[in-house]
Image (tube, rainbow, N blue to C red; front, side, top):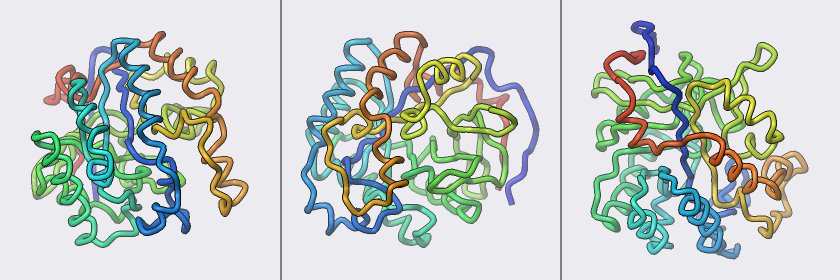
Length: 296
């Protein structure tokens, strides 16, 4: 069981982090028809054109950001990953085949992580030290994940959501700001998803479908009130012409497609009104000696 070792002051200034999860538009979690790689060939590929939204946003606003890439993307679209690296952005693993962590055995997770790391490293010639799970899909039974990450050279994890989400939720401890996770395999820096206390309930607002759902005035207000903010976006979040997967339930279609029309404009406004850092920049800005330590 994870326990808090102490409670200490984290940082002296506000930190907003800009990240992107690089996957195809059909990489929807918890959906049978898009789960298996054997199904993916049925769909058109849109990643190359969708990446233009992200590259243009970052270049136009002179921003740094961090990218979590699938190993599958590195093999299927090597030029995309090479361009991310050439532009000087951080690159981490987002798994190999975008599967829910809580549906994997430890050995399946280990093999998937290893394949993703090697696919990206072989392509760009640099060590991969960051990881984010698909859909923040760590649960309370996933403590072994941290040991596996450390054993494969991962130094920074961005997988934790300490509130329940559609795809998981790791509620063994409250982790809403950068912390150190201690395990018998070593230590790992954790940049979790942030939340906002709304009517007594913690809600996520800073990425993906949550960001698309809330109107901009609410996002701006919650961003102002948050001392730490971890954003995360996907290329599909900005693709207004992507097909609709027909066998999704009405609620699943809502989650997957609502708010795409205005998402790019909202993000463009956000990065113009707030300062953002990459994970590498944030890592250097934090005094890790005084952050909270969470022990497995």
